[in-house]
Image 1 (cartoon, rainbow, N blue to C red):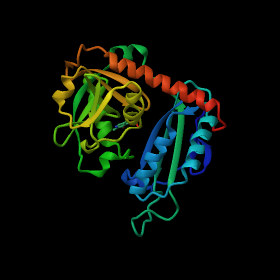
Image 2: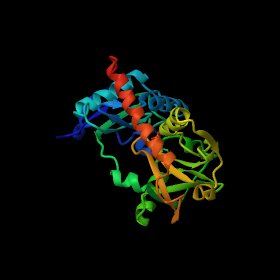
Image 3: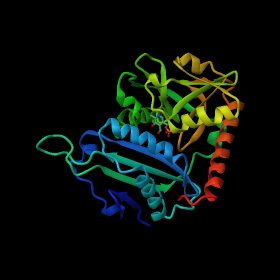
Image 4: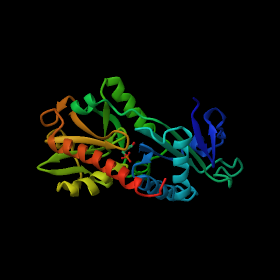
Length: 298
Ligand SMILES: Cc1ncc(COP(=O)(O)O)c(C=O)c1O
């Protein structure tokens, strides 16, 4: 069955979706995206994803539709692809300022390009969660001094290069350091380590994307499990010598990080605090689903 996509206000079969070659996103990678996970048709923390998108769009002078319109478009795309009851789906929303005006070289007045896809998502197998991710340290660096590091930018070249590097090493993930050789983030994740029931994660000034899942861990799960949190400068040795470590993103949720640069972290197995957080995340998703069933929201 052909995928249905949302493009600028309409749901159309993918084969009929057209974006101009003059689109700013294509010409310069100028634009933003969000990747969200839906559970039984419920998009987890959609409001946080859209708030991040709105903030970033303002910084890039992209004139977005209202967040209510975007949220409806996301749910309509899920429904059009028969994913409203799917156990797990992946939604990608991409925006650019629209076409370039050839004369001025700046975005034309036609309005932004908004493109949404939804497809079924199979998370890594339980075996992978039981062994945890193996990561290498990438030669790609994040720049804390560049505002682009904090954006989920369409020009994801650094991230893709780091992922290719990890694949060519035969490992699951890459860790990106910043220009000061401190740990910034993963090749599509935020990094945490655990010592003495406290969660440590690179501070915003490390050159990271502030992940929605990172925020859920710091501000929802950690307080409920009475874990301390510290946003700090992280040296690679801090990570390697920690009791436990894990990675977060909206698709893989909380993934134990057990080997980095051929060194075992802690016992080399997912630690107790990480496992407790993984369970608490699942419970939070379940609770959100139950709460949503009691309301009229989509
Ligand atoms: C570079 C980078 N950092 C962090 C994250 C985690 O973000 P989120 O938790 O919002 O999915 C991602 C997500 O893909 C990412 O690409």
